[in-house]
Amino acid sequence: MKFKNYILFTGIVFSLLSLPIFAEEELTRVTIFDNLSLIERVKRIELKEGINEVVLTPVSTKIILDSIYPSIENAEFVEQEYTSNSLIWKIKSEEEKTSLLRVFYLISGLKWTLNYRIKLNEDADSVNISGWAKIENKSERDFYHSFLTLITSVSSAEEEKQVSYSLPFPLTFKNGEEKQIPLFLYKNVPLVRKFLFDADKYGNEVREEMVFKNNKENGLGFLFPQGEVYIYEEKEGRVFFVSKDNFPSVLPGREGSICLGQAKSLKGERVQTFYQRLKSGEQEYAYRIILWNYRDIPVKIKVREYLYGEGEILESEPLEYTKEGNLIFYEVEIPPKGKREVRYKARIK
Image 1 (tube, one colour):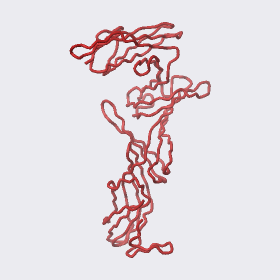
Image 2 (image 1 turned 90 degrees about the vertical axis):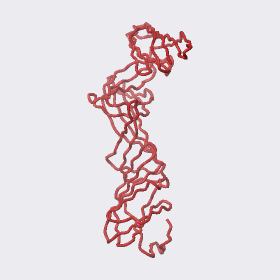
Image 3 (image 1 turned 120 degrees about the vertical axis):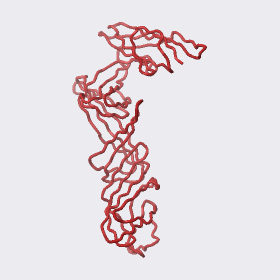
């Protein structure tokens, strides 16, 4: 701070005009977005009649100065100055009184990410889903007893929405510190295990997936943002690590699907059997997909194929398939110790 208008003597500050007022902290709110954070600081100060100098400290060096928005009850701001890690205002008051100072400003250096922990229960048909926030403070300022709100955006093909989590209790997170905070826990969510063959994404592996419906009937019906997920499984009273995956964003009323890893005793292979480029510039191609089941019971496998451009299916075996945008899906039941094939021919622009 610049002591240009007052003198430091034996530890006491004497102003040539009036003593500076150091605002006492009443409340701090921190809202962390994807890239920036909004800080709200509320303080009660004692004003004298005339011009008062009010000091707010500490302030992060990563403050965006043009974003500072101060307000005060029944008084007038005359001047604002930023020095080192302090904000200084000259405030004109018509009388001696107690007033409430509210200051809003943006800073960089605070970051949060959402990740999930999932535990498959021993009955194998339900799951516990917990969400945790990881908060990193590189703002060059400590925050003590601050009320925290975390906001992120979730995009879908139809729209973009924001998700907000407000913690009901104040937190302390210091500069250079990383904290993890539980946000929610949903227990015994019903699920169905399914099998997926996606040659473009997983090669010859058949992947096992955990599918749940994000609706109120299952105790959910919320918007789940994307994040990393660590999956555990309970067996005979012990908990084992299964896999790590990405938890996709799941809108209310939709299905959420999480990969558990490679399915045992199942295998797939995709072979291109035809390709030609037409004079029109369009392309035609054909694939043969073979699926093996080495288990003693029949298994249904979903096959996911991609049309890389606007196109149509010209030939298909089996005839039944569904098309969602540029995705083609087959549902194939494979007998025990047996195999099935999928063949199709497509044309794309």
